[in-house]
Length: 436
Image (cartoon, rainbow, N blue to C red; front, side):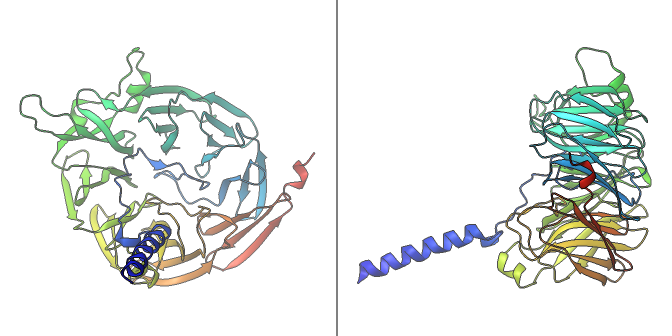
């Protein structure tokens, strides 16, 4: 009898362990793994890595996983504009496109290709030892900074004709200061990096820094021993620690938002002033640099409370040069993609009912997502204005006031939804003219 009881207890414990493994966040495990430490934005299957200088666009480029090629669409006219072959079609492809540009950038494991929309290409083999994991792009100044899994930093300068005119590569150590933690290209054209400082050999004291790298001086350096170059005035010691996320503020070229241990901060690169708000023991749900940078925290990642909709969230953002926060109790299970537009007073959210793995960054095309939907919210009072479902099979992209969906089809099928009018247009058979 005792043996049977013990056996039942063991089986119950094993079953609970299996169920915990099946559910994200079960047992209140917090998926805030300090995985932020990147330059720019993680490369993802989304069709556009939007730069902070980008304006609203009514055009998208998207990699088609069915035919392993890249499409170019005009969402306003619901037209298919072009189809492009890729290097290494069997691999994932990460696309970077700025509105109004006459080219897009296609990245795979070993190639960075500048593809002209006219059909011409400028190809180069990358020098990465590791795998590209994130990038920062400033289309107006032609800067592309890529970060790989070995913490190598690669800087490209691209001219208006889409030609790669400069290329620079360095490791993660900056001068004698320390090691790169995170960064991005600010509106002033400099690469702003958070640096984990080296310990003082005499006292053991560690001082962290924020450094604004002069990209033009860096890529012009002909020294064999390449180094990231910065002016003495652009090296700032700070009391912030674990600065794991850095975001430029659109329209304010000398302001950056920083996530550090226990704080969200706003730093003025000119005056060196820093203002901060505490994050308490809340955990990150989503980092976003789409339009206006912001971070969404939540109190708990417990699976069961999430499924019941009992989620309290806090958003941190910068408006009119001031760091702000907003409490939200919206009944969203999981936020996949967050797009904040302060000028329009809108918060656009792509959400899901079921997620089998978390992502701290914007990623709404993961194969595991089910029950996706899009909601537009008025920011001042969090009124939901629009709510629409997204097909489980579709690769989606939001551009301007359009929600674009590409379906798995050899012949070609896509839809464009005008979010404001709720009007849907279908584009079909656009692959036929390219078939041989």
